[in-house]
Image (tube, rainbow, N blue to C red):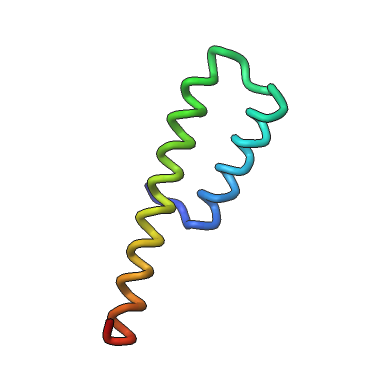
Length: 60
């Protein structure tokens, strides 16, 4: 996935708002849920990478 952490979070927020508003029809629901799962995985990966980088800087 070639997007920034911030972009992933913003897109995830959009999906959440659409779900809460009932703005996603059944045909799109599966695609949106899969995309949300991919975005969450991307954010978790970036957080882990950042933690590792910071740990290396501070000798942890």
